[in-house]
Length: 185
Image (cartoon, helix red, strand yellow):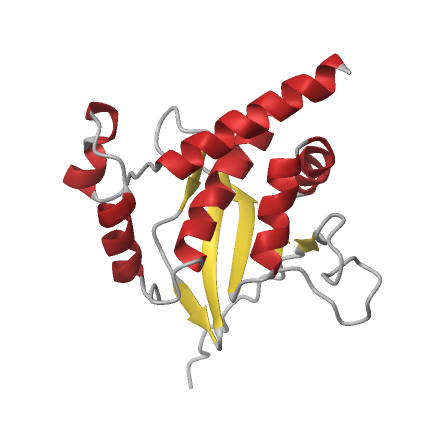
């Protein structure tokens, strides 16, 4: 009888980053408390910690994610050329939780990466804020509705893989400003 191949089991250690300074939320001290933000890289975990301590906007995004039904996975990964980070256009379900994934391109300065993380977390919140968005198709419909229609974002309507929103742009600007202010102190 031929042997059948056994599937390889890959263990992936997730770094759970508790919400920073949010009363009543996961603070790392409550037994069984687990963050909704799942970070798969020590480098990204440190960026999130540092960024949250310097940017009230990023800290607020993290706190808001904790109040959703979403699990947001942050990992190193490639995006489109010249794109620092991206929310993958895929929405999965795990029981009552909606799962989203964000890739961060390695090789960025810390400030660039922190800003990119905040920008993509804002996109994740755009999805998670609308409880009707339950599938990948629903995500596409959402971004076709709320996405910018500028010459720079024309690809989003041709390829359905690239979207931009004013809220994410404003989030990037706010975090950039807060990081600059923190550096000047």
